[in-house]
Image (cartoon, rainbow, N blue to C red; front, side, top):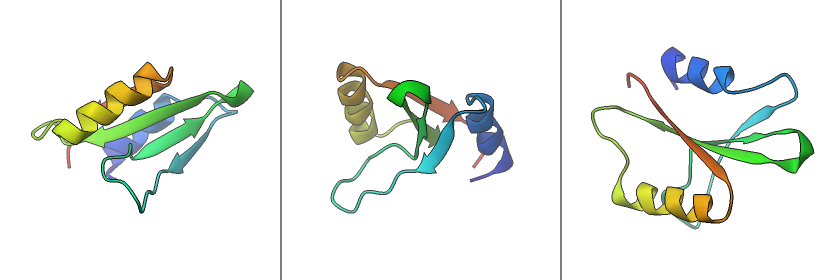
Length: 79
């Protein structure tokens, strides 16, 4: 992850938060990171190249997670 994207993730966090890389071996298109917030809240983070945008699968995944009540952030930065 480049410095621009890393700074955006850190800027969205508080001292109590923990950012983790999201790995899925069974599905394509999971968000890149998730942030555990106090009180058990989870925020998903997608790091994206501004030239490419979200893929159709990522758009569907974002809508699905939001429908479940999760916050999904998309940070665009240089690759």
